[in-house]
Amino acid sequence: MGTQLHMHSHATLPFSPLNKTLISSPPLSFFSQRLQHNRAFGLAKNVNRDFKRRRDVGIVVASSSSNVALWESWKPEKGAKSPSLSDVVWPCVLASKGLFITIAPLGAVCAVLFATPSSPGARKYNMFMAQIGCAAIGVLAFSVFGPGWLARSAGLAAAIAFMILTGAVHPPAASLPILFIDVAKMQQLNFWYALFPGAAGCILLCLIQEVVMYLKNNFKF
Image (cartoon, rainbow, N blue to C red):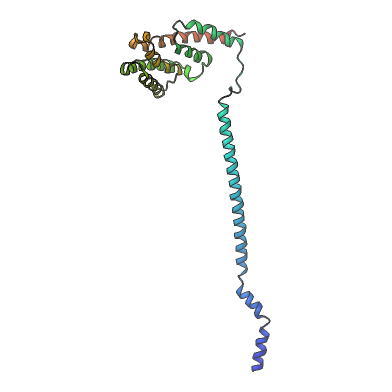
């Protein structure tokens, strides 16, 4: 019996290392899960690397596009057609006829009405609302603060705020408060300054603008 047990134990010895290996080693599913994990992790790293690369490229593209947009504002507008000779002559000739009241803001009004007639600043509502309101603000600023830098700065700031609040943005009107504060002859008009010379001059310029537009559309050369 002892011999049989000894032989039985020796018979199982050649298999015991294999059995031990099979028992102590992880199952096959562990390796497959590990392989899938490594593949997924590698894919995640590749995706993350690709995302970072695209993000960096996007930052570069966005930065370059912002720089391009910044410099584009310093260049002439693309696609603008060259004006004909009549488009230049009619506004220049007739604009001078409307400047019998020679104040600086009306020169800017001429540029807006005749050079960019379709711009927001050339709208009649914007023009007259801003001209009357900003002129009145100049009178009030002078009455409260007197002549000096405080009246100029307060009048200009209030004029810009008025145009924004009323939706009547007309750039030439922003200079009306400063004109009233600095010119003694204008101060003699008091609140009549709200209507003359700014608003009265704009009425004349609007009439001349209609003539200019008619000539530009019907008498081209």
